[in-house]
Length: 52
Image (tube, rainbow, N blue to C red; front, side):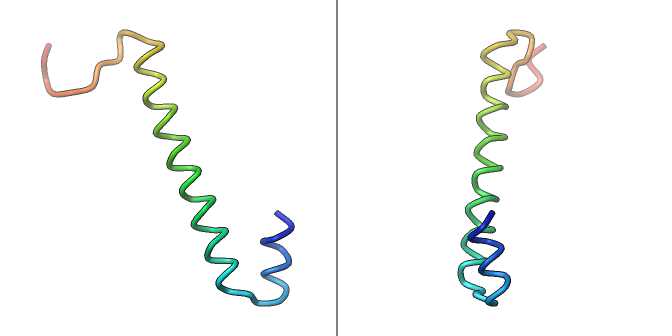
């Protein structure tokens, strides 16, 4: 929050890029963890091919 704001004020582009990448990676990792946990919690969810 504050680091991103200060970097934007002082036009510190490497810091802006690093913070953006870190937030993006955390979002993708969180989505992956949630997706895996859905499969663990709800046995109706199956991953894979068309094995019906």
